Image 1 (cartoon, rainbow, N blue to C red):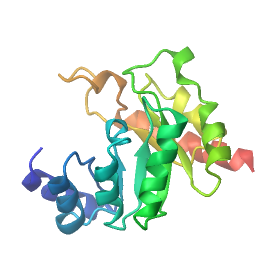
Image 2 (image 1 turned 180 degrees about the vertical axis):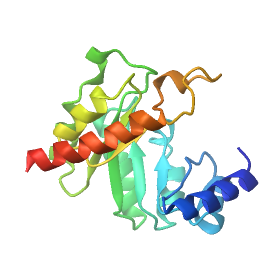
Image 3 (image 1 turned 180 degrees about the horizontal axis):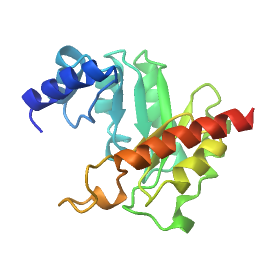
Length: 187
């Protein structure tokens, strides 16, 4: 997607009063998100969790960081968090993530959400979901996930590697409605 298209999407999102961002993979893209798109946060892909110079560059922008943890060990997550903190940024949301598309249910290990919560009690913990359907992200909410990342599609039959695991408009609405109900029911 081009920068022009992202800016058009930003204008559309502003009309709908929703936030928009993108996951950057270069310093130039980080600068675009911060300086042109005025993104409210920066999402770091799992593959960049151990790209410490890149994490430091992002952290110095002083935007909240949503840090995906797929394919990583706890010591790598710890080093990433410390890299961000050392750069002067403590606005971090850590996402439990399984980097398979889609993962088998027995590979998801939602209890890692609890592990992350106990390891990083000062930071909110969420879930980056690549499962089919809406059950697993809702289960993550019952464990205390404060943020659910779910890919979105207009049509699951579109070409591309992630449309099958993405949520449609109706599924996103179900996740939102049911997450709210779960949150209320949990007290």
